[in-house]
Image (cartoon, rainbow, N blue to C red):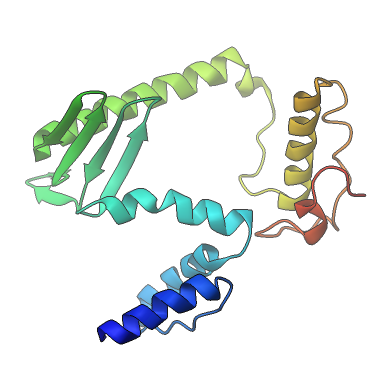
Length: 196
């Protein structure tokens, strides 16, 4: 692309921030079946699309395809792929640790050891949470849920907490939509907890 075309593109981006762009891809059928729904989620307008795109920022910054990200308050690590076969095991190609005053690149075996250690810590914390909140005594629920109703309830809880009234948080939000399962909240749910 010439310098002139790039300059015009930048000027157009500045002037018409809301313009739409047509995208075309060529992919193997099996790959397309898997990636088209992901692309649609990434291109979605609103909070959902913004969240999906933000979640992929670390993928864009990584030199290798990331297998896992682990993030604390000030430190984070990345395990880099693709997985490599090592005899009967699979190991990552490497990893990265970023912590205050530290940037460290990990070799495949350091990355694998850190990956396993962090996974063990996560498992221990989840199991402790399950025990502390007695979740095993509750009946199992389906993994998928009514997104519209759940979003409305969560937003009502957040609004009640923000206003200091936690008692009415769960009462307000049980009536929304038609009860069908959806991938995104209805237009009414996007308006917040005040809509009826």
